[in-house]
Image 1 (cartoon, rainbow, N blue to C red):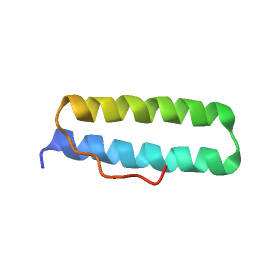
Image 2 (cartoon, rainbow, N blue to C red):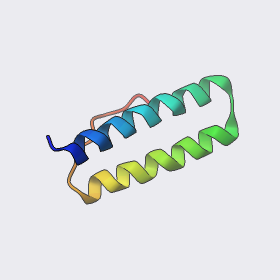
Image 3 (cartoon, rainbow, N blue to C red):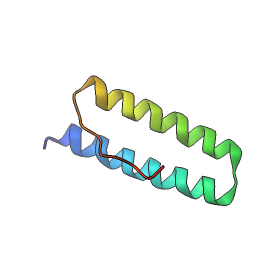
Image 4 (cartoon, helix red, strand yellow):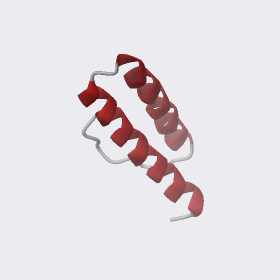
Length: 57
């Protein structure tokens, strides 16, 4: 795994964690922000052929 892939997967994992926390706290604004970031990261992964595993969010 190259540095780009590893970094991207780490950012996705961190954003998923942040999204879960925002959901748990009921912070609707932060949920929107984190979901947008996660969508962007997943799109970037797809564009570069990086397989992202199933998520709990």
